[in-house]
Length: 391
Image 1 (cartoon, rainbow, N blue to C red):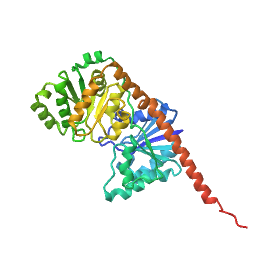
Image 2 (cartoon, one colour):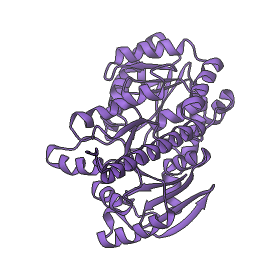
Image 3 (tube, one colour):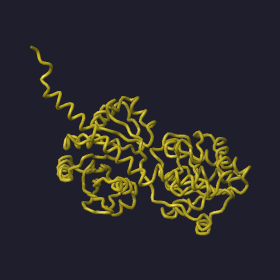
Image 4 (cartoon, rainbow, N blue to C red):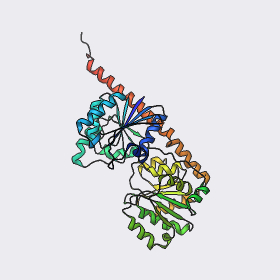
C-alpha cells in the first residue's frame, strides 16, 4: 500500500529539511512506524527549502506549499508530486488546514484522506462553516482518544459518515536502562525521585503539582523533584511558590531546558513521572516516560487515560486537585521498583511502540481503502442502475 503523509504546516523559523527531521521526531517516527508495518511511505512536508531525502526506506519531499506559498504554485507543484507518488491513502497531519485539504481532495478525488488531530480545538462560530467543509472531505479522522472527537461532533463539524479512529499521536525511541547507573550519570537523588518534563504554563498547571508535592513530602521526607521545561510563562510564580514553602525549598530543582538525549537518562534515573495538564492532544513526554518504564502520575484527561490504559499503569488524578495528586503519588511510590518499571515498559510495547503504532496505522489505512472502494462502487451502481423494470 502506498501512503503519503502530508504536513501543510510551515516552520516559522524556516529551518533546513535536515534540521526539521531532528526538531520534529514525530514526523519521522509516524512514517517509520507505518513503513515498519509494511506500507510504502512518502512524507510530503511544507518547507521553505526544496529537497528530497531518503531515511530508513521512507522518502521525504520538502517543498514550498501550504499557507506560505501562492495557491497556484502550491497546487501545481504539490499536485504533480502527488500524482507521481500515486498514493492509496493520504494521511494529513492536523485538522486546521481546510483550504489545503479541499484542494487535496480536488487533486485526488478517489483517494481516501485521513486527518490526524494534533491538539486542535473546535473554532469559533464564524469559522465553523469552513471547518465543516474541510473536514467533510475526510474519509476518517484519528484522535489519541475518541473522547477528544466529542467537541467536534457536538459542534456539528464532523459528518456522521466520517470514520473515527483512536490511535496514539506518535511513539518513542527511548529505552529502559539501569537506574543506578542513570542516577550516577545525572546526579539525581530522592526516595522517591519525581520527574516533571513540560512547560511551566497554565495548561500544565505546575502550581497545583507543587501543592501536591508539598503535601506528599510530609509523608515522604526523602522525596526530591526535578523539573525540565522549555517555555516558562509561570516561572516567577513557580519560583515564588518554592521559595515560600520550606517543604519545597530543598526538594524542587528547576533544571530548565535540557538536551533531548539527557531526558532519557533522567527518566531512567527517576522513580515517578508527574504532569498536571488540563488538556493535551497526546502527551509526548508521557509517551517517553512509558518507553523508559517510568511509572506515571498524571491527570485524568482523555489522552492520558488512553496512553495509560485508563490508569492500568501508574495513577490518574483529577485536574487542579493537589490532595488527589498527593494520594496518587503515595499510592504509586509504595510500589516503585524493577517489577513496576517492567510492567510499564510492557504496556508501552503492547500499545505505543513502533510495532503497535504501525499495526494500528496499517489497519486504519486498509479500512479506509476498503470503505472508500465500497462507497465508489455503491455510487457507480446508483448512477448506472436503470432501476426496477416494469412489464
